[in-house]
Length: 80
Image 1 (cartoon, rainbow, N blue to C red):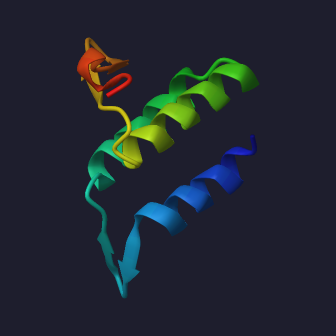
Image 2 (cartoon, rainbow, N blue to C red):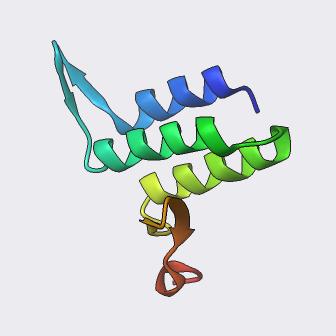
C-alpha cells in the first residue's frame, strides 16, 4: 500500500473541501491517526494494518481511541 495514494484516497472519500474549509465527521481523529501512523508504523506490514484500521474507522466500521499514546480499537465496535 502506497502511503501517498492512500492518504489521497482518504481525503477524496472522507473529506469534503469547500474553498479553504474542510468538512469531515472525523477530520481531527483522522489527522491524529495519520500523524500517529507516520510516527509508529515500523514497516510496510504495520503501515498497511494501521491504514486499514483508519479506513474502517472512517467508514464507521470500528471505533478507534487513544490510550497512553497508543491507538486502540474499542472492543464493542468489532463485529458489530
